[in-house]
Amino acid sequence: MEVVLILVSLLTGTGAGWFVSNKMAEKKGAGLLDKAEKEAEAIKRDKMLQAKERFFELKENHEREVRQRDSKLNEVSQKLREQQNEFHRQQEEFRRNEKDVNRLEESYNRKIEAVDKRTEELDRLHRQTVEKLESLSGMTAEEAKSQMLEAIKGEARTEASAFIQNTLEEAKLTANNEAKKIVIQTIQRIATEQSAENSVSVFHIDNDDMKGRIIGREGRNIRALEEATGVQIIVDDTPEAIILSCFDSVRREIARLSLHRLVQDGRIHPARIEEVVEKTRKQIEEEIIEIGKRTTIELGIHGLHPELIRMVGRMKYRSSYGQNLLQHSREVAKLSAVMASELGLNPKIAKRAGLLHDIGKVPFEETDVPHAILGMQMAEKFGEKPDVCNAIGAHHDEIEMTSLISPIVQVCDAISGARPGARRMSAESYMQRLKDLEEAAMSFKGVNKAFAIHAGRELRVMVESERVSDAEATSIAFDISQKIQSEMTYPGQVRVTVIREMRAVSIAK
Image 1 (cartoon, one colour):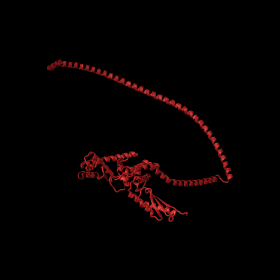
Image 2: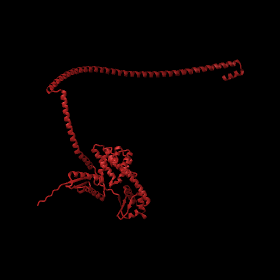
Image 3: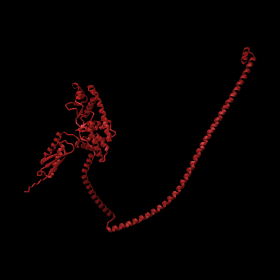
Image 4: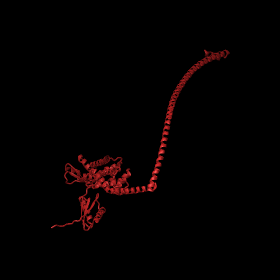
């Protein structure tokens, strides 16, 4: 309807049309105004509700905070009241203690006054006594004190000199016996084994037919085995046995195990030989490491470098004068630990140095450096302590000893190598050494007879009583020992005993 009126107004262009249009606009404006007022009223009510809710929320929060503050104030007030009560209690106790202290102080002062009076009385009596003594002795107290001090000093000097002299004499008498006792006890506490090492190994076979298979066509199998192992294989008429000869016991062991595997397998040809030898070599290397670890565990040595453990394992396959090097090193380690304990030193360091003292004999590369110096260099390279390194390098006097452990390791090395049965010696060299001992003694004037006894450990010399006096006999014993020490090589020590006797013979008829 409104649209129609507007169109009529536009078409007619008259004032009535404009009037109608104006009325319509006013009516529309009034409707919009009513609608706006209603929306404003609704918005106002919502805002009033939100404001009331916010007001109540703030009021509740405020009341909660007020209650919390009141609670805290009450707690603080309660603590203050308790502290105030405690303070009043302590104050009261302090007043009571102050009264007790005052009473004690008064009592103490009274006692001090009594002691002072007693001291004055004693001083007076002392002065009177000193005056009487001075009048009786005819000298002052200072003069008497000086004379008494001089007498005491003289008596003390005499007693001290006598004590020092007796101590020195007793030390001289007992030092040698104590040293021998320590060495003997150490040796007796260590179990030893006899030497049984040699330069050949015997491989046993079930029958002699296997020898031909080991030799192979035109000897190719035995040549391949010798080239792979570096061991000389001797096949002779010995029944059911093949001899493996080599100075290196590791090679001999590799050859022996390789032969054992080849014989058990039955396939013996050059390619198979190389394969078996290589596997055996790896097995021996693993066994060497295992032996080193087991040795350190048995001896209670910890923290050893893996390369040093490997070298300890290699000692099992090395011998010196027929004495197994690992057995010798274990023996030296035990001897060193016991002797260090007897002397009040660190047995762990001594045992460590004793085990490693000959590692220079099993180097991975050949060198001209002495084994003691080489072993010391290896120990330093792998982080061993200075005392251990010095003991290794000085056990043959090639460097100066800087630790008390060094002479212990040197002595124990000599004990282990020089004991009977430790090292094997050929009969010819043994007999020659005994002859050299006797000839050394016979070269001196006045010597009638000389006998090497106790396996060359003692040289007993008989001198002519008419040509040699007692003093000269002592000099001959010293000269013979010096000649043996400077000109001969021998294990351990040699005791020289010179005997001079006078025989008077008479015949009754």
